[in-house]
Image (tube, rainbow, N blue to C red):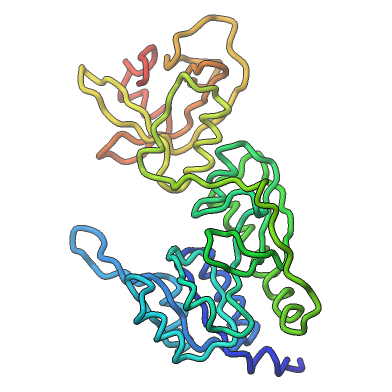
Length: 322
């Protein structure tokens, strides 16, 4: 295959932190872009032993002998590091840090961001989770020029993607990572050769993402079953959804590992939060509809399928979850 000399000679700096970032960086490396530096978050200490964990992006960069920079904040020192690299283009995918105006002005072809929503919808740090929380059936990826705002820059390209009924953040991220990487690789040559123009966003249509926190996984059984199921999809794998169950007068936390959905109520009236048998399944009554329990995990214990859990906790049926 004949190599694209423009692609190889272009001096590219990559910035990113997440699984999306790793997928985008991998696609650039495989497409033989000249990556001269990678900016990612600092290493973290995890577990009881406080072992050092490198970001996936750093691991990938080191495998390909690419210099890595890990500033705690994108301050004047980080700007100077970027300036010394003399990039023609900076590509950003879920970096998680505010990049100042001084840095944005350095590359001649600008700072290009890969965002996993159809901007101006779902600006911010958690567009996939928020699309699932809201029960959307379609989302997509956007390639945009960065400015000083949060996902407010002009758009270079967009592509739609369907959301399947059982998609979770994990599965949707996998699909959009591939779609975003592919769209980026198709867009960069067009932008360099000035075959496309950047188009301003319609800011009047903008929506913002809420930042996902661990406490967001708390279930409210007064919500409809469909809302709870969407929360499960959005917060899988992290932070997961949970409820509380009174076991021998002690309130214990239950994480719902796998659930199903029935949108209609049974004929027999149940209390909100009540656990009951519904055919061969175990359900929990919500304000409207039933959540079917498949697998759960009591805090401090291993997860188990619902029948095994009931065998060990016969008083679970008929209890009210909080």
